[in-house]
View 1: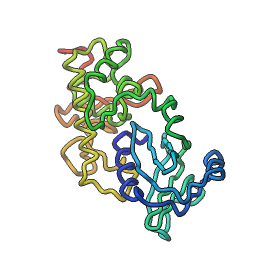
View 2 (view 1 turned 120 degrees about the vertical axis):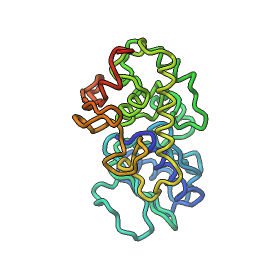
View 3 (view 1 turned 60 degrees about the horizontal axis):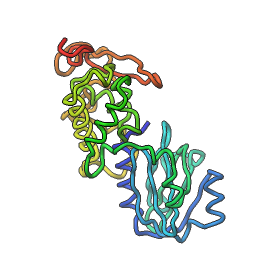
View 4 (view 1 turned 30 degrees about the horizontal axis):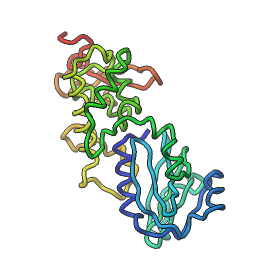
Length: 280
């Protein structure tokens, strides 16, 4: 599933390509969107802005119309010049938004809804979001309060809970726990405020580094470029994720992996650098 850094970069890319331009073409394979377009045409509206909220992507059109999408596991947005060949087959197309100079295409996006500003405020997925790790000003106090209100939850699971803090996905979960020196299977109530604060600031550091302006903007599905180490070699870009059995980059101990509830998501960690019991 794309994580918050990917959605942020998608939103930034789409905003730069589309904002301030009028829609000359709108096409969708999704009946719910098509019905709205039939009743109130999207073509002719101006695209005001594109933004990310956690893992949600929002495209604002003039006339109080907002397209809300979520990529889940399979979705992606691409941008093309008019007439340029797509890199995916049309059968995978879900939404096309065309302007005179650019065309944005959503492929295999499973969640897509039109909203007004009023209906968007009532949307459970957005209303219940915790503070974004990539927000302009990080609300550390609120995130810490949210985490500490769930004392029985394992911290690895807590970092994935979008109602506590928004944007972290499975790759960053393992990387943040390693960067913070915390075993992902420790209960939140076993963590000190210093440890929790270190995890939050590490999450902020890792994710902001992955939305740097120097990153390529044309390819908007960017998971393959994610890195948390300072090494730009593809095989050296992550500390623990996907490295089961390989030596820890810090101590040489073999990286371990285990599925973590809820959702049985895979979690990677170094048993030496991230002991289950503090001080051991």
